[in-house]
Length: 295
Image (tube, rainbow, N blue to C red):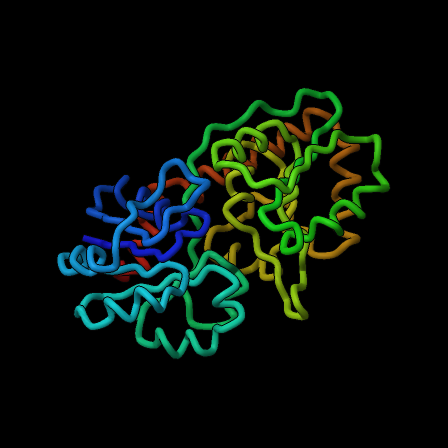
């Protein structure tokens, strides 16, 4: 049995990995200390005591999001421990956390973190139905940031200004439920997830779960990935349009807005195919099992 534990399961990643493992018949239990307000389906909320009791029957424990709070409680149970690094906490404290989790298998869905420690790379699993493809009318560009500063929203709006009148702009910084977020992304032809190559003076910019969700629905996704080779070495061709400089962003938007319907739809179809092949539940679970057990 594999047990996946989170203090707060950001982007519902622990739950998604658990669902993928269950899809190939792995006995997997996923527990979280704090409920997430945006996801209708998520890991079961449990006390620390229940987490510890559940882990006694586990062969492997996956500690999500660099949670030393959980790790300190389960590290002496004699289990194989895997730690997932995902966000700002690791980015800003990676030296201390690398030392803290020394001896554990560590993995991440962030390409930039591969340069901060000896981690295995694996993304979230995504299984969504494609949305209708581009209808030939005025193209719709969407941007729904969870954090406008971190996603580079002001710069995105500034760069799009020169194309005013050539597209419909669907934008909101209001947080909504995960289901509502998926519904509003369905209405876009182009989805801009992120443009933030630098954050607080440090290299930054790696796509998140939202980019994969948009790609699975057939959106042409613009995002950052300052270490694209990490993704390509693990998965092959990317389903995203990577824009790491202002000029790249402007050139890509200009090309997409001028593109004919058939060419645009063909890119959408390829995006769906790549995302479905690389990031479905079964392939993600098999990749995760290989990381954990080495086969």
